Image (tube, rainbow, N blue to C red; front, top):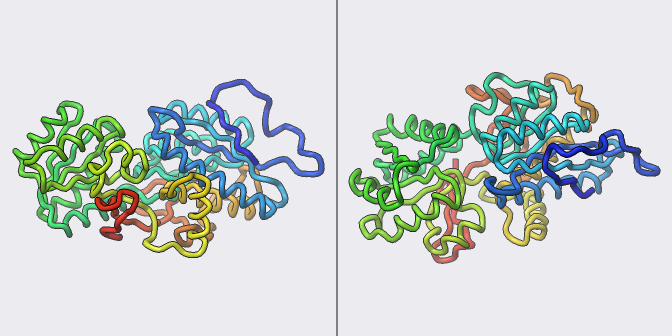
Length: 380
């Protein structure tokens, strides 16, 4: 079924009480939290939604949930935590069986806290912040690797490439501060130095001067896109003093087409994290082709995360019914083939939610000779 997309807060008829279509059961409703407008990363949201929609269509083509179709109720979070929490309240009132999605970690954290308080299952598709909830959450599970796992893989890549003086240019944010801490905790005991640079206080030109002064061999951009990431990339690329400095973006900004469109050749050879295996299996290959047709471009790992989210929720709903009274071990019982491998959830040390440990992790970049081609530099 086509998803219903609108911002939270408007009055409407109680969707879950509408009459069943002639000759069929009422739809099973899934709430979907997706950043579709700025300041959210709308391109990531578009890929996430494409994966969610494709999987819903395939579930329905295969008979739905005990004969009832799945239906998405999509809410645009616009990267606003308060808006996401309000959407969870609204969706709970509409009788959704579960909530899914979200890309931005601070937004997912607000949604997770509200969903867990309501006893509403929430499967987080793409946010990686370790502390997705403040305390152990029964109702929340996550597909994306935790930041402490993925970013340690990235740190290993830096060490393997010989980088021992690593500058981190970050904006003020819980997410960026957490990433900086992961990098420092992993790099420092191995003989590397992490040099913090405050993007709230430094111009792009001043960032270049700091890199020279500290003899940094790598600069990691922990910053929003397009601002301030794009001006910093351009400044570094044009500074002859920094010709040998590696630019990196562990959060994955170069994954999406907007990066290449805005930066052109300057955006190549910027390693980032991607959560895909080096070679997709039969399911992933088929889904990848369908996502490409739907998006009109190569699907990002975020699109695969969206697809896998619905695959997991469909399995949970088939096993336990479409109401919200899931048993405490519902996530623990999941064992389903996703596009990137078998998905199971467990309790993982330091992670407060049910976690798939782990999705495949790669460090990749855009090939300078062909910006549309991604090169795998490291796997973890």
